[in-house]
Amino acid sequence: MKIKVCGLREAGNIEAVAALKPDYMGFIWYTQSPRYVYRLPKDVLAALPANITKTAVFVNEHIDIITALIHEFGFNAVQLHGKESPEVCAELKQEVQVLKAFGVDEHFDFEQLKPYAGKVDYFLFDTKTEKHGGSGRVFNWDVLNDYRMDTPFFLSGGLSLDNLAEVKNIKHPAFYGVDLNSRFETSPGMKNIEKLKQAFAVLR
Ligand SMILES: O=C(O)c1ccccc1NCC(=O)[C@H](O)[C@H](O)COP(=O)(O)O
Image (tube, rainbow, N blue to C red; front, side):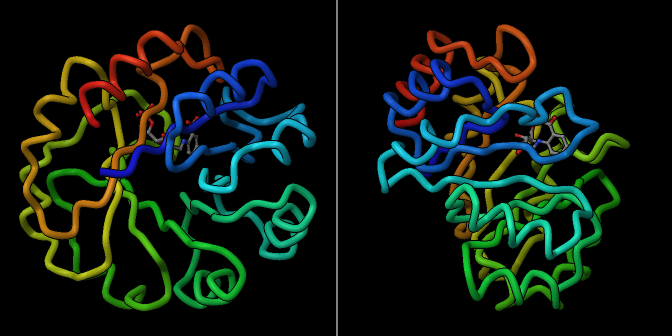
């Protein structure tokens, strides 16, 4: 199972998380997030091992800005949490991996994902909230039984040391990885390395 740690921004903390060897690290370019990367250290990002996929997270950002940031910081993936169209995803997919996030609740209609087939690399199923992400809240994972496409997905939303053992029991054929964020923090944007170590031990 792949592990993504999201919402990083401080040099020492980024390096400490990288030492745990996550598969993906996420950096949030959404000014309304408490994890917004207002001072992302470029040299620290450049020094990350090549097998960690550096992922820039956006909410309804203009594609020209996304592309400029990909080039400036050397991102290998983008994660899109807004109403980004399949066409925008397809264009970005020519350059980097695309993770398209969807807020899921009990009424989520998986049919709406069909136009994204082949235009994204992964879906990321997060808990539906007004704030687009980082809620620390879990959705009812039973709804994943209604997802029948081949596109692999990350599970996100409120994952914590209290529910990771349960996550390991999810047997969906397209289940690709987990996304760890606010439940592994000392404060917004600062990851708790001890908690993450425990999580990695459970998941690997
Ligand atoms: O984390 C945020 O503040 C955030 C805000 C707006 C869009 C996306 C955001 N996070 C992206 C993520 O990948 C989070 O890991 C995901 O939303 C789950 O967060 P959490 O429920 O805190 O585990």
